Image 1: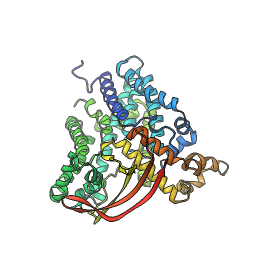
Image 2: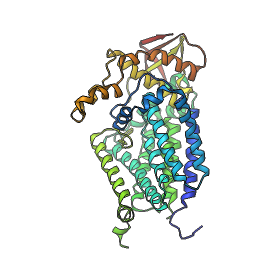
Image 3: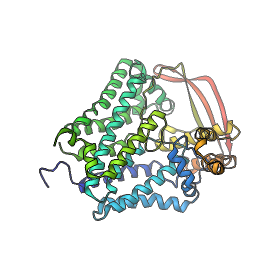
Image 4: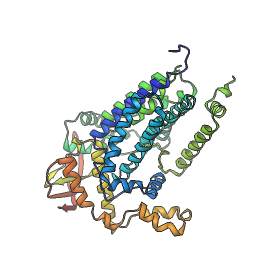
Length: 268
Length: 184
């Protein structure tokens, strides 16, 4: 190991990325996020997502949705490719490029036919992209781009909370929790998320304080624009953000952690 | 190296012009879709939970009843819950509008960019047609049978039910209605 290096080795970085991506993919398999699970769905929803329009014009989501064997091959081919990328070192960029292509073919298809679009898939895209470059120098530059993209996502989220008015509304977080947990309240009131939510719905001041903490957490990432000195702390904040929003609000924010790995790539 | 030369863009420009152009285009697209307030992969508007929400008098939710028993959405993975709710919402919207997809209205916004000769192809590829949409109830029952409950289903009833928050819990109000029933 070079003690004067400004970043960890690309190989180590790739192992962390693909290792975590494998965990995310296994969770997706468990959650029914496979093409074979929603095979032959008769309706689709592209909204105004023009990239999805382009995919539909190229006809590949329609084709995959109608062929069970192709869906199966994609679902398990991607799993195989992640494992290959995790252990192979030589020419990993070729396998990573194939993985990126197939993963997004799959994501587009499943999100179109499940009529559910998630923003966090862009984090997967930007996190995997650097490992598709043959030259280490280019991969390094794209990892840095990924780091700035992550900072952008969090800082702009904080900015919107301020300009759109949720931050100035004292009952905002309590109201969000009421909307978010109605199904738990009527179906599974002993759920830990609901128990936390009922306490916060009753204690509006505490809920507002927690919403401010969420805002400040996101705003802290602005430091990352000026220095890499606090990256490890920001990474810990990001883990706390993903875990706590899952427990408090039942939001799946674990894809953003994949992009968060860019924060542990650079040394101070 | 001075401070300007240390910046990311300067280094990127110096080391790889193609990557510099790629990153620049990415940023331009991100800003374009941000100004348009349009979510387009991978350029999204990151404004979740930013608009004020207020405590309502009553809250309404869509509930699914399988052979009379309510489906416990809270005990299935989030993605399956989203698939059930969002596919149903998309179908029900089409059902209420005589299976005419408002996706065609969205296409009108960029009509001038679509060549007239290929407009029909665009609509066929992007919008839902009535023939496929009418197959939804069968697919939906199969999905629930195979992925969720793992037994045969005779009928699925979808209702909207209103609840009032009476601390420390939610209680059902009289305002509930059946939206639709799918029979096998």
